[in-house]
Image (cartoon, rainbow, N blue to C red; front, side):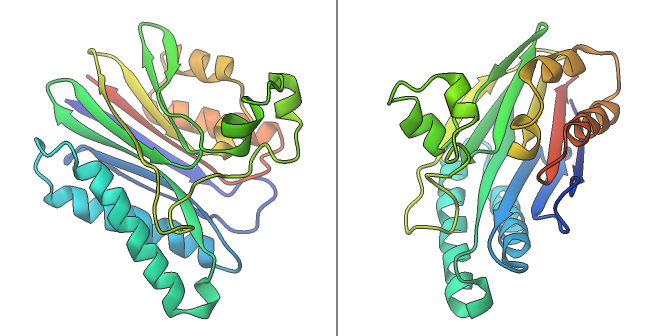
Length: 237
């Protein structure tokens, strides 16, 4: 059995919200997209990607373990076609992270970009995705310290996103879960602002899932809320 809650907020600076999420407990499908692009293109890219992937996964058989990665590749094609069809959508893209419950206390997680998935188990918080950003893929290899990377002007530059190139590198893995474990999907408007210690303490707390999502969003806003903020919490119960 699963419980879940998702919340989104435009934050304290942005005038619109380019994040979009789907949290469907009945199907065990959870998707978060953080769009980018001029005018309303980011909003269009995130919604199109999330809804298209959701429909694709609804039709996939649980035993088809390649369905998540194939879905990401198809979503990339759909977004690029949409951008070519309308000039105002040119250059749009989105990050995308998805969790798909396979049954048997297993969750499949896939991602492109820097929206993240964490697993909270036995009081510990573990990051299970890897950011596809300049900081993670270039800066760390150059030997820059975490302090230097936190302040680097290119720290948030994406090296991969849905819709920005013909091919996408999809990260995918299957995560075992125990009863009481929680999965957190979030955009960089949360994990890039709120320290992991606060994420862990919040998930450790006795609050309900929705109370935890609300608390994390408010924590990001108290720290300036420079971007849209979205969190989905899923619990194996």
